[in-house]
Amino acid sequence: MKARVYVSLKPTVLDPQGQTIGAALRGRGYSAVKDVRQNKVFDIEVDGSLPREEMQRQLEEIAREILANPVIEEFYVELP
Image (cartoon, rainbow, N blue to C red; front, top):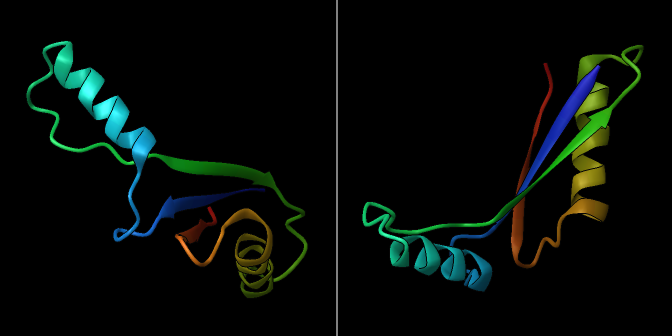
């Protein structure tokens, strides 16, 4: 089974890379682009033998302790 973990900067944290991309897009004529935020996506193959609730708990622990910086980032886990 594949799980997906999305990690993004908290809304109050500046995203210089997203701002640079947004400016480049507008500079190329994409005037409808108002804002760009960079995010990370992790696709994780997991053993489907654990109960769904336990797998969700483990993936959230992995995201909180390893994949995301809780000071500046937030995350959510998506299980099929």
